[in-house]
Amino acid sequence: MLERQERLATVMTLEQGKPIAEARGEIVYAAGFLNWFAGEAERVYGMTIPASAAHKRILVLRQPVGVAALITPWNFPTAMLTRKLGPALAAGCTVVCKPAEQTPLSALELGRLFVEAGAPAGVVNILSMHAPQPFADAVFNDQRVRKISFTGSTEVGKQLLARSAEQVKRVSLELGGNAPLIVFADADIERAVAGAVAAKFRNAGQTCVCANRIFVHRQVYPEFSAQLQAAVARLHVGSGLDPATSIGPLIDQAALEKVQRHVSDAQQLGARVLSGGGAAAVAGGTDLFWQPTLLADAAPDMLVSSEETFGPVAPLIAFDSEEAVLAQANATQYGLAAYVFTSDIGRIFRMAEGLEYGIIGVNDGLPSAPQAPFGGVKESGLGREGGPTGIDEYLNIKYVALSL
Ligand code: NAP
Image (cartoon, rainbow, N blue to C red; front, side):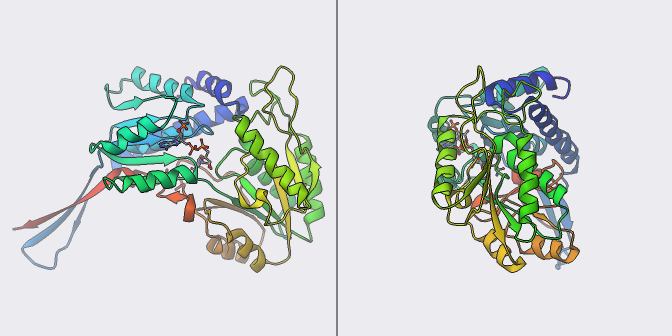
């Protein structure tokens, strides 16, 4: 993957739209999961446990679950696949992958590399298709498929979880988010601005860990919003293949309409547009570009605060106290990622422990890494990908009771 980085990144940018620098970064990140789990493959240890009866022995084996069905979204077409493929193969499972309809080529390019690298036939199977239903029916009706790993919307994740009950298949779900990003008065404002830009505008705001609600302490609100406005003004909207581009197109018309609906709802409910606020015209481009948008005076009852916008729109919400912002941040059914910017060590621990999220970025707008456990609580998912526990999602534990 690293040798073919340029080709893989170019295919991704052409089909998904993200800036080429981000696509290159995704290939390195995606390859990182194969590297990490290649290492973990050597550590699928069992256990022996002392028994209380002298003639008994307790052995614990860890074995592959069986065939795993991997269903992935379009926003990180390569990384979401290797985050599942890496641990599945390392555990000893064979896989059937279904990439999103919008981004089959990135997955097929990766599949081609598996063939070239000598993966035995039938170990990595990638099926691109126009509709997900036949795939879902096939995997849910087949007893050989023992594991479903899904990354995508909460709505579809709930359907898959319900269907998995039919044959009691194991399920891992990486679902939607509604991440708060909280800037305290004691934060390094420059770092907080850089963190907000990374957490909000990467992939044109189409990430599950995207900062969806930006809470700013009232004392630093004017300074933070002025600096963020200046940073947003430097973002360049354009073709993903243009190296100057930092914001590419949205994935489709429905995505654009959702962003439009969220921005106009916010305006109607009293938010002020500080930057952007509408579609962007890109010479020779499609009509799927949206200007990076900054909304001041946002409030919790607006769609931008209550739903995942999945676009380059940053709503700023003022707050006065740590207790109040913690309660507001947790007031959502989602629990994937949260971000805190502060220099107070006590507050770092209070927030890290109090935020009901699976991932907390502390003075860090980009916390994802192959070595770290990634996943959510509440309606953001089940299970963890990456990190030392990622392989457990693809292993069964078998207890062998031995009587001497
Ligand atoms: P989606 O509609 O749920 O689709 C995701 C995948 O599921 C696609 O491959 C899709 O296939 C497939 N799918 C849809 N309906 C299905 C069904 N009934 N049975 C089986 N498969 C089905 O999600 P999306 O809108 O493309 O992706 C964006 C969402 O993913 C956002 O909510 C985002 O937050 C979430 N996400 C989460 C993470 C995470 O790690 N937590 C990471 C990235 C994205 P088709 O393409 O054929 O419809």
